[in-house]
Image (tube, rainbow, N blue to C red; front, side, top):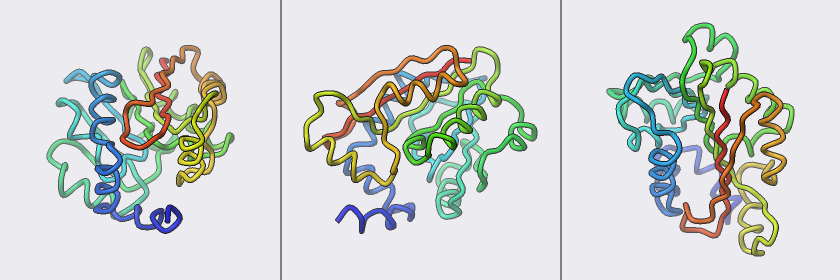
Length: 202
């Protein structure tokens, strides 16, 4: 069943519907109110923004979202284009040079789709994109000691093939960021699932 769901989630409507079912609305509110908290003058870069799902939960700020999925970006422009800028592309060093630096970089549900080398590249890129004192915020599924068999099964069936432990996520982040703090949350989704939220400060 889960294998059949994965390709469907590449379509914006089903992506949004699935996230509604699993409780991502509450998770996004928690992320916005407890972790992101952007100020009106701050610039925010959302790497892998999907169909713009995070934007409705954010107060006014200078938002820029990137995603390589054309359908996601088209959906985001239709629904949230008056509140942010959306670009169908991958983020690179050239992107940073073109658009300048940011106060906040988001990489939500992204790192567990990347192998270690790709994850290191992402952290380095985020560090480069941030102003001094800026923050990179991530969230990903996470294996943890004492986890129930149901949670471990759900994590093992995630679309991302590189779900890690808390220590391993932090180790990768610390290759670029000296300051890394994390919260392991089991309370942000309706399904049995452990989410690691990291705040990496430049």
